[in-house]
Image (cartoon, rainbow over all chains, first blue to last red; front, side, top):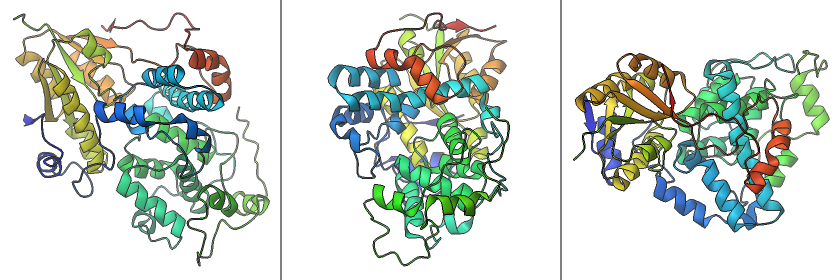
Length: 265
Length: 160
């Protein structure tokens, strides 16, 4: 038995916890970007201003940042919903509750299907996909040469967090542009995301990949530029693989036979 | 002082002092294990582990009963912890995980296992297929906070 003190200060965590868990984690022993725990969860919930939630699709928009706390049960979905219902009103309030319900939905799918099934394709992909189950070095080291993609990887590793739009863009780049299996993306996210869990993580990847949705999710440069306020596109000299109309990209990514009839629901 | 009759297994999906199993057993010793077999198999960056540690630390600070943290095999550590406290019952809050089920199944012969339902957002208890249909069914409950579905599982289901 190896006992771990239950009262290490934050300053002591990297060195002492790092030593006690030596060999059981990747990367350097450092504190999380956002502090964990019930106290931090309630502070985050209190500080959240749903009035800005209408802008949540933009990277600088008003997201709650509660997902790591919800994922580890430091605050429950029911508690968050009660606060939102009690303290807030209007259209954004209901949209926020709808987004929260995705977490419940993924949990129910996981409970219904079981962990093993959710970690495999739930349906056939909706195009002739040939995915490689690996995590390439240029992505792992944030050296793809695409400023946006490299920024997503860097943020993922530094903060253990990505905005939902960044997750979707990265997932689409991974699966559809790089032809990498969503399972490898799932593992990459699981390693770093503070809020990564089997249900949300695997099912979101499958949704992008089209094994848990009617069609693959993909974006173009205009979409990235719009929701990121052009932060990577301005002055970008890369040969942008996203710079085309949706119809062009669809043909390029999924082939002329898309969408194929899989007989899926 | 009353001898504890139950110990609580804390896991990474319910790290708060208001965890349903902890709330039912406020005086019970509780254990959180950094599960070595899992962490040897699954690559996880340190900040994630530190984040969970901070969650358990908050629980320990909020309780008067013992809250212990160990690193090792979750099954072995849980069994040793329960034996050391001379209890015949292990309580935990439900989570969907093969590892959780495996540990609980292995402990079941020696101990009574009591699993408490997670505090859910909805009382929805039918099959789910697509989010759109699910949302149509639960929208009123989620936005108005009223229970629309009956027959959801009760807390404290005993196994075995």
